[in-house]
Length: 367
Ligand code: BGC
Ligand code: ZN
Image (cartoon, rainbow, N blue to C red; front, side):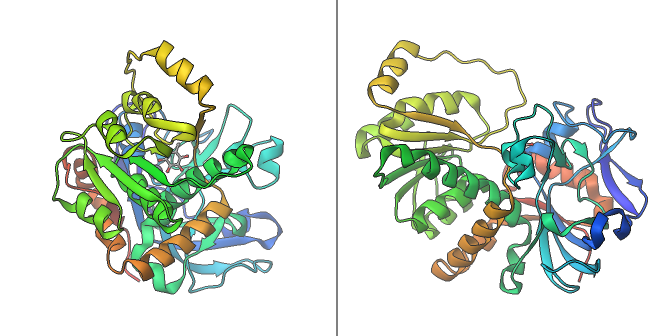
């Protein structure tokens, strides 16, 4: 069957190849699920893997099938599968467990081992192919009524984890009812995090460079959040105007912004970093000022990667709520379909060159 793959370590090696079909019996205990892939989302991670900034093949292979944001339909299930049945729409988690205690209790997104396993990213093949097989443990059902949001499930799981982790950590405060959030970046994670925070009742300011109106600013406002163009009002000015934030989520992909955000966080607040920055950028920060403010203000910095089943499930609920509260807004994120696996060059072109492509995804097959 066809797959879009790269040769890890070799820049711009993206290609179409033929790979063996998966076998449902390769999953032990009759818990295998065979999924026919319908759509796969791609993002900066895929671009950076194709730039050979990171990414590794599974042992024994010299290629890596790309794609970690999947949406498909169940075709066949093993005898002991109970969570899904043929015909169900599904997505799948990205990480697979290693050997730490966190891996063994289903929180593989919190592994304490250096080596992590991520489908389509590190040491495991991804979903940009015609079908895949996995254990039901990693397959998450997508409600029929949300199938039009298909590839957003995985990015949403990452946003859901980032927010949940902040709340979890803030239990240190005994009482914490954040009112103001700054979300940095209006890409998929920024927009989805804005939705989650809005649903939690915060005043959400979503920041990105370009002055509106444009698609991103319209989506932000459609979610009843406030769009702020940093070329008009930078983070420092915003903090002066409306006050520092109780919670900041950085999803810009820019480490300089991630560090700069430390100066816009209020007392007892939490700053969450979610960007994977494969580059070598350096930045100068007023470290004495930040240091004293952070100590005197009991501020928290937290990194959040990936997501487990629970985050997928809660993210899906928030997507459903988002569609009910703000009808028709979320589908606008899904800007840029690519027709078929054969069009992998077009997929990369959109990722690399087209700044207006908010979400690129491959239409792998029709239902
Ligand atoms: C994916 C995450 C993954 C991360 C780091 C992101 O693009 O959405 O699931 O953990 O990359 O590899
Ligand atoms: Zn991703």
